[in-house]
Length: 121
Image 1 (tube, rainbow, N blue to C red):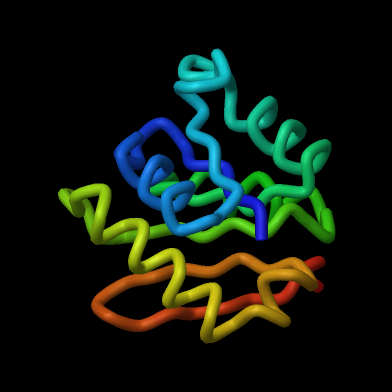
Image 2: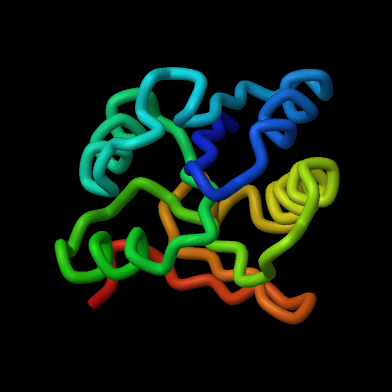
């Protein structure tokens, strides 16, 4: 899987994922630190990446657009260090690979993951 980590996610998570042989980039490392959510979504679609974010706006934008992607993982737990984020992303990827590849909105909160397949309907 290919990952695109949003601005609120620690950059160190991207580096750790790369160390673990994952294809991960952080928006800050590709000149998109100040990019709009729509621009980040377009970039994720173009490069077939899964967005990892703390921001609820991505889910809203994709849900209201009727789009079938990209997959977005929203982490609703602030203050996680990079290593915890990287480990969480891999746990979710191992547990739900088919859903993530097919297109979904995933929310991690209080130790649980909720998935909604795309497009929403």
